[in-house]
Image: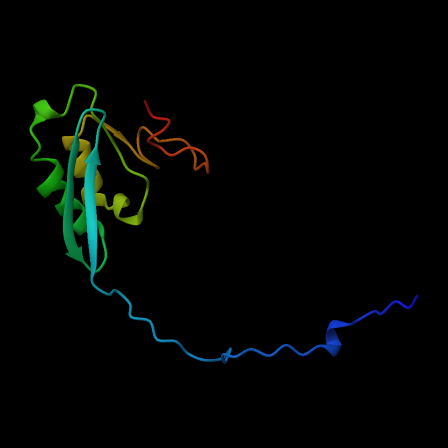
Length: 128
């Protein structure tokens, strides 16, 4: 019985596409973003808006236009606002606005932080 040993140096792999080709990609293309608020008793939204990207000022406008006009009686006594830590969530003006408007605020890096990132749990799963 003869055994054959092959070395990868003896093999040539060819591809149909050029590995050095340049592919064009449009940055900041227009998108449709969806924002909604989920609570144990209500679903507020969804609200659709068109922006190239969500930055701090856009996120602050979203909260001021869509979330804060919701009547306080529809937000029950134990209302807790949570967010996951996207870059727009750390905008200074947005944080000071939420600290003034929302009684309990949970987000990464905040006064009431949520649990460390876990593949099994989200911050909504472990807060209440």
